[in-house]
Image (cartoon, rainbow, N blue to C red; front, side, top):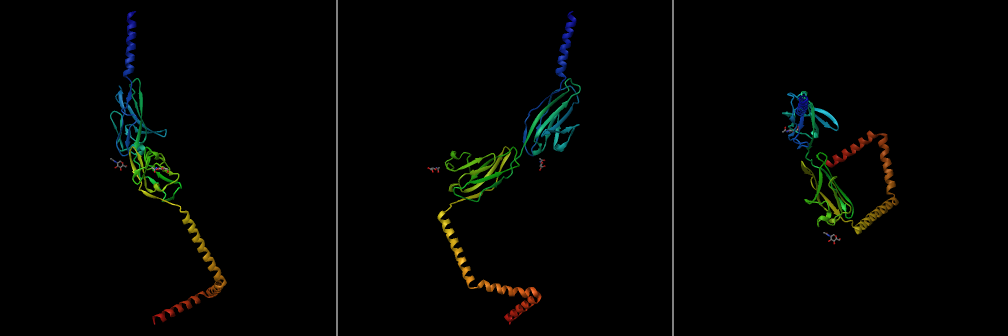
Length: 302
Ligand SMILES: *[C@@H]1O[C@H](CO)[C@@H](O)[C@H](O)[C@H]1NC(C)=O
Ligand SMILES: *[C@@H]1O[C@H](CO)[C@@H](O)[C@H](O)[C@H]1NC(C)=O
């Protein structure tokens, strides 16, 4: 009676250890690695336990829910070709990353001689891209009290950059009340969209403005542009309008006088006389004109 029970226990123990040892188990050093563009990065896939001598190793890239092969039948394929190698046992090393490498990667190991024959590990890679010079728009001149909007846009940087604005090389604080220099200014600054908006500009808001786009990979800024603030001078405007009205009046009077003297009527007549021969015999007319010119010239020479 004791013997079968013991052997049953032994069998149980044996199967248990058999299962734990004959299983493929993967591990990684870093599930969320990142690199700057054009740098090298390792997607580590380490085998903690395996009995199968020649396991099948595959890597897939998953971008926008679409999987594609990166390593298949012991070859690097797809857009990583010539840019990646496998380092034993299953680590994928990208030697020169590009922005399109930002994706999820799955290391899959199939070990046919193990009890548990399959394991996989998912790694999210981020390739950071330095911002390029942003496009900035600054209004050239704004009248006092009017609104003004300064815009800054950069599309290359990844992750999406944050924006800073500078006036006369000094950073404009997010909250204008945090600095005595900007305390009374009417702006709101959105560091996500890059828009700096004044609801009513003051003389003190004039200056050289530029914007900087910044992320973890680096930063870039546009050249500074002048924003001028001018006064709307009411008396000046009234004077200007008066001058324009006076000039218009003078012109009208002059035209009326000319009409009365018959200046336009006589001009019309000469116009008609001029046209008639041109229509009838243009060549002759031109010739006589040329002769006249010639005569005039020769007499001048003599
Ligand atoms: C990486 O790739 C970029 C663009 O393809 C290239 O300009 C650069 O020289 C490469 N860098 C290295 C270290 O191979
Ligand atoms: C802001 O405006 C108030 C009232 O117009 C004035 O008393 C104050 O001195 C101004 N502050 C700054 C820093 O210009």
